[in-house]
Image (cartoon, rainbow, N blue to C red; front, side, top):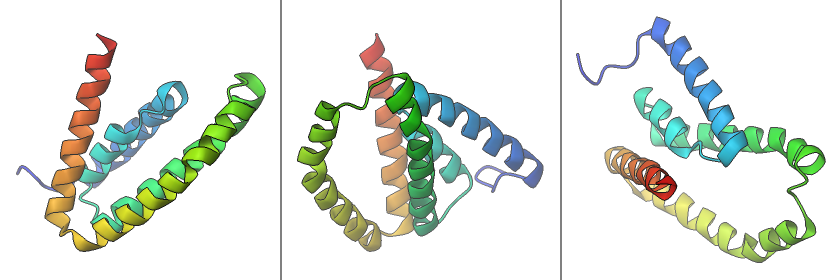
Length: 130
């Protein structure tokens, strides 16, 4: 039946597959959003679990990437740190706005927004490459 929660035996494969592909996408282009959102939608995570799991995933992925960026790729520079500082007030404001919005939206509307934004992100990434 369509829309069922993924069977347990397939669940492990999905986590392995999406984890591997998301890790690869994170290292080569920080493009995990649509992948992880797809996994969480397939697992029917409620919005609170969706957001908290996504935050942990991003935090751990970025934490793992920092040494590579500093010591191997030398891509974290004083300029990139300054840009981060300049944009941090807007990121904080956006985080609070997002926190407020997630609390207000019903689960169904929230999931529809996630699916729409993930689809648009994937399409934009594909079109940008053409």
